[in-house]
Image (cartoon, rainbow, N blue to C red; front, side, top):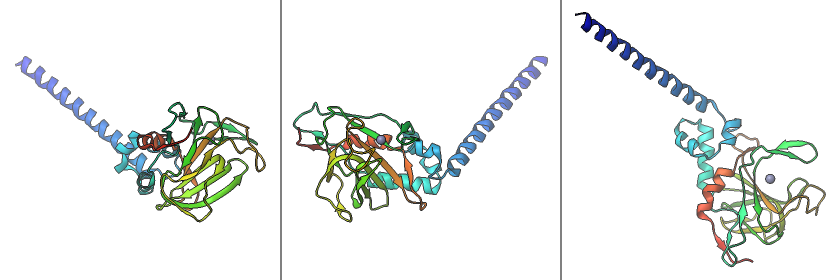
Length: 237
Ligand SMILES: [Zn+2]
């Protein structure tokens, strides 16, 4: 008899623990859902983790504006901005996740993009291609970005390509296709028009949303890793 009571008690304790754990799990899940749903495009976590595997897995729980921008970027981003060389496989590029790393030019600021480095360090050699279809909305010199191009895609995503060495035959207002040549990688910027050589040759790529009426950058690193799967080949050496 006493034996039976002990068992029932044990069973009750086990059941109680089980439902407690279940409840705690549900509370945590709900908290995560609330956190994600409460984030806007300007949220630091959304911008930093943009296009991550985890973000795609949780896509349905994102707020409408966060999900909408994520999908626009996926829809419009077609190819990696630097093609492989069909003539010389040693012409490689490399890049890391340097989101918000400290940059110092006339004061310090956080890095709002990804730097795709030319492993050979030669300016004017690596072609720079448009990631998306779109319109050339900005072209010309910026003190920080040097010779830069800004392309606005059909969904309104703004792609910013900086530090070019030279431009292809494009003008502001022109329509461009994904994979179209925009110019060549260089080391321009950080000074008055024509300044070059202040840093190694690379392409600074930025991705921006204008969805909320203000310019908000997101981390392009994971998008670029994805786009490498669809990297074009060009004949250059
Ligand atoms: Zn950069």
